[in-house]
Length: 373
Image (cartoon, rainbow, N blue to C red; front, top):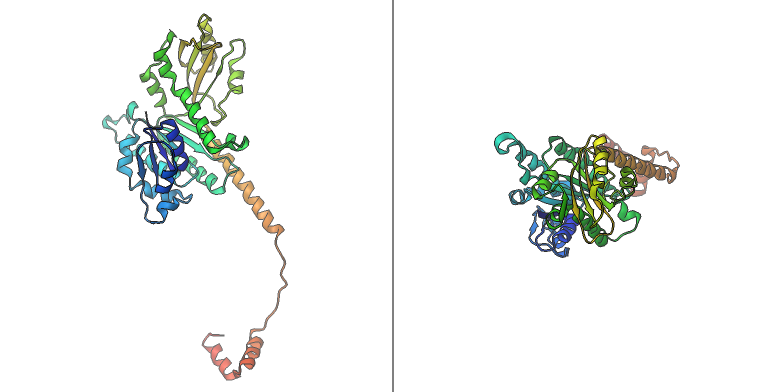
C-alpha cells in the first residue's frame, strides 16, 4: 500500500513506516524538512507567507483551506493508500477532513452506483491526543471525531480506521521518536498477515492478499493485538490481558480475523478453540493457521472490527474539558479581589479640573450641551 503522512505527527510516523517512498504532506516546508526519511514531499500553500513557516497554528480551518490547493494531487494518491494523521493539530486535522469529505463525494459518484471498489478504499491511522494535552488538541479532536469522522463512518466509504492514542506515551513518559516506532512496529505485525501466509507452510485455510485487502477495506474501527497463545486459558481473558495499549480499547467485535502461528510438531487444531469462542459471539472469523519454525510457542495475531468507541471517546473528552474549565473558573474566583467602590460626581470633578486649568463655568456648560462632558 502507498503510505501518506499528513502534518507533523503523521509525517514522522509515515516516514518510519516507509522510509523510502512515503508521501509527506504539510503546510510548512520547515516542518517537512525536519522529517527524516520518506519520499515525495508536498507543501500545501496557504495565503500567509509567514504561515508557510509557522504551520497551521493548531487551527484546522487553515489546514482545510491549504488542502484545497493540493486537492487534485491528493486525490490521485489516496486511493488504496494508508494515511497517517493526528486529529489534534491544525494541519493533520484540517487536511484529513478535506480528504474524508472528498472520499464521501467520490463514493457517492462512483461508477455503477456501488461505491468505491475495494482496491480504492483508503485506510486511516489516526493519532489521538491524551486528555491531559493542550486544550486545543483535545477540542480539535472532539470536533473531528463527532463531526467529520462520524459522518464518514455512517456512510461506510473508507477502509479500516485505527485509533492510536498518546495515552501510553504520556503515562510511561516515552519520547516521541520511540513512541512513533512502537506504533509502526505494532502495525507491521498486523500488516504481515498475508506475507506470512505466502512464505510459511499452510496448515489451515489461507489469507491471501485479496482476502486481506477485502478485510481492511471494511469501514470499521480496527483493534488488533498479538500474543503467545495458551490453549489452556480462556481466550477472552487472554485478549483482555494483551489488548494493544497503543490503540483505544476494543468494543464488541463486528468481524474478526486471526492468524495462528504454530511451532513445528505441535497440534495445530487448537485453532478450533478460537473459532468456537467467536462463533458463540456470532462473529465467525476469517482465519488462517501456518507453521512457523522460528517459534517455541503458538503465536496469535488477532484483529477485531468495531464501530462504537468514538462516541464514548467524545463524551470522555467533553467531560475532561468541563472539568478543566470548572477548575479555571474556580481559580479565577479564588483570585478575585474586591475593589472599593468610589463615588464620583462628574459635575464637581469637571469644575475642579476646570478651575485647575483656568476654564470657566460657561465653557463647561457649552461642553455639556454638545455631549463632550
